[in-house]
Length: 373
Image (cartoon, rainbow, N blue to C red; front, side, top):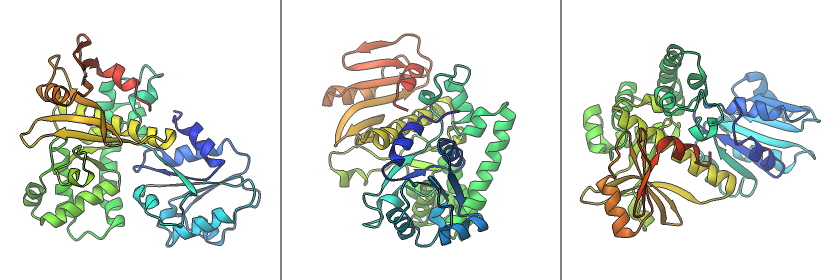
């Protein structure tokens, strides 16, 4: 299935290095090879493969290469200076595409070595907006049951999807986490992972997680950061006009793979909406140069709205997720009235769309299909 970012990536390759980053098995290598089909003399090299590693280190790919794809390059010591040197001394007509699962922060925190030399694209799982032309696939229930990762989403049966997921979880815990950082207590991080699966949509209590896992709050925080760095979870923070204050309040955690969520349909639908909104935000920023952020609203008294889209510290839209509720949530009403915000309540099983003041009650299927990506 064609990924919607291809055209923008092809455009960006003509100007700079392009990084494609995202979760494990989200389709980065497939996308890179699909892009390679647009070129006559592409060269794909994976740093995990010994033979390719030697070619990379010696820079001995064919001279007529017009697209150089470097997979998992971030595992190479000194890779930032290496790719800078390759780009600055490249032959005329050579485009460079780099893929991997490293956090985008690694690229943004490169100092001067890559400044002005790259565009980054965050590749996330499929969304309803991305598959809307395929009616047999474009259903919210399918996303909630299977998640948006290509292999389980496109699998012939639910059984195949479940088998993939079991192997995926095992690979994340036993391979990715251990390769990422030395973990003394693998069982503890498994417990943290399971706690988070059951905590989607609720403000995180580090103290509670630490107590349940039998570890210190510092270790619990470190484990959560590792899971986030590996694109297993993502955190959404509370909105505040003061950036420094916003990170002091408890974030909420969501999974890139909605099918990993343990909970009722409300929690699973909220997670699906969260990852869809995040994809909309990242794609808008990567492809359109926007400056969107995904936050949530919460007062000290506990009034809350699930999400809000922000730009330049201003709330563009407050968004509440409901699986089957036609009555507008009290928290959404309170925030929209007090701060004159545009509000949307996105309902999975909605009987009739309607508006009340500056709040719209909208069908989830339509809302999700109209997101940017």
